[in-house]
Structure formats: structure tokens, C-alpha cells
Length: 331
Ligand code: NAI
Image (cartoon, rainbow, N blue to C red; front, side):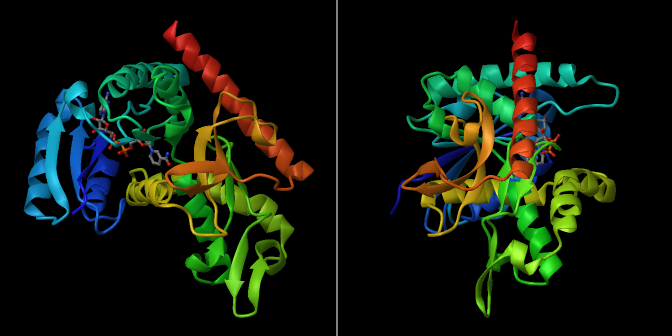
């Protein structure tokens, strides 16, 4: 039998945590034959709720779940983990300035970076979900210099999946037949959902989305806005932010990273830029990637038109600004 993989979920007593931990324990993230040990971290005010989540995990009698660590101690939470899903963070409250939210989160991610660097398993893979996701991931990477930059990523898979969902709804076709959309840039409203290379499997073979939806006004306008603003639409409808779709996307992200992407398919991941597509190196930016043997690589050679270029640069500029704001909070 396989050895158990230790998976850390921070902010595990929160909304996304509550949706995510049962998925991991059921094998949705790492596969149906991979035993797991869950490490759950939250802060002292949430300790009692966290103990309730642990009780429910025991009550669910998941066959793959070989242990549960529920703690408010960062070192205990990080010790020996192979995968770290960072969902914990400080939410923006009414009346708070962007800088105040940034400042709170940057200090959390700086501290947790050190704990992961010292105590996680070698080659631990990190996925940051908590907002500002790209910049939290960048801070984590910078303050954990011995963790390879390739191992620190952030979640834009939810945006990617939302884009697939909108295309499939528009065409009234199965979402599993749509592929290769791209989310470029920041997990914020400046993200650029790009369908220029996306395709759909139809009875008449593989067709480009641009050919099937011959409505550039919709594709270059409303489609982009719907994907960018979907988080706000969920909050308006549910009075709570997306949780089941975020948890599911986190599983997709790790699953593809660890087990590989299907041939001919790419996904979107926030990764450390190497300068591909003229995006400044040293940002965590969402790119199209394929994964093989536990490593992602940026899809190269895609043609970028002027419309896309401007949108890719705008979201890069926002990330440059967030980075300097983050550093100003640290000094
Ligand atoms: P939530 O507020 O329900 O849960 C957050 C949890 O984090 C709480 O239990 C809180 O006590 C805990 N926490 C706070 N500080 C912590 C720390 N220092 N260490 C460990 N835990 C800590 O929020 P929810 O809805 O679960 O969302 C979590 C984060 O994910 C938010 O930042 C949200 O903006 C972000 N998000 C990101 C998405 C993405 O696609 N990247 C999608 C949806 C949400």
C-alpha cells in the first residue's frame, strides 16, 4: 500500500476549508488509492469550530483518511507536510483600506513561509488560495528561500473553470468538451480570461471557440466581465463567497500538478514568472501550464494579439503595484 501523503489546509475551520477537507479525505485531490493524513490549522478564536470539523471527519469514516492533526500551532501544522493548501487569511472588512488587508495578510504569509521552510517535507508543494492570492504566494516564496520557486503557486483554477463553464453554457455543450481557455495574471478583477486558443470537441471534430461563438462582442466584452465579476455575483446571491467551487478548483489544481494534465490540455495556474510572454520575472502570474511528473511548465509559443497584450500587461501592472504595496507593509 502507498504511504500516506500529509496535506495541510490552513484556515480549515472556514467556509472553503469545510468544503475542501472532505474532498481531500475522499481522494478527490490525490486519487482514490492515495491515503492521506490531514493537517488542519486555524487561529485560536476558531479552535473550537476546528475541533468540530475534526469530529465530523472522524464521523465520516473515510477509508483513505489515516490521521487528522487539528491545531492552532503553525509549527505543528507544517511539520512533515507534502502538500500545503493555504486558505487561511484575514478577510477584508467594511471600512478597511486595501493596504490594511494587505498588511495583515503579508505578515501571516511571511510567518507561515518560515514555518513551512523549516518544518515541511522536502519538495513540499504549496498552493495559496487566500487573497490577495498571487501576492500572498509571492511573499511566501520570498520568505521561504529554500523552497524551490517552482513549488509555490496560487489558485486561478476557479477562474479557469468559470470560463469553461460560461463557454459550455453559452454553447449548450458539455463542460468536459471545452478546453484550453487561459486565465492570465492576477486573481482579481483585472484577470484576463482568454478564449483565443480554446476549443470544443463536437460531433464534427475539434472546433475553436471563436468559430463556434461567432460573436466577438460577447467574447471580448460580456464573457470577460462575467468571469472577472463571478466572485461578486456569488457573494450577492449567497451572501457568502464561493466555497464549494473554490474547494473543487483547489483539488483540480493539485490533482493536475501531481498526477499530470491530459495530453493536449492545459490549465491555468499562478506561478513564478520566468519572463515568458514578456511578463516581468519575479511576479506570481497566472499562465497556461501543462504538468508532467509533478512539475508544471508554461505553454510556450501561443500567438498573442494586440487586444490580449494590453489586457495581459494591465493585470501584470496591478501585480507590480501589489508587490510594492506588500513590501511597503513589511518595512
Ligand atoms: P473564511 O473567513 O470562511 O475562512 C478563513 C479562515 O482562515 C477562518 O477560519 C480564519 O479563522 C482562518 N485564519 C485567519 N487567519 C489565519 C491564520 N493566520 N492562520 C490560519 N488560519 C487563519 O474564508 P473563506 O471563504 O474560506 O475564504 C478563504 C480565503 O480564500 C479568503 O482569503 C478568500 O478571499 C479566498 N478565496 C480565494 C479564491 C481563489 O480563487 N483564489 C476563491 C474564493 C476565496
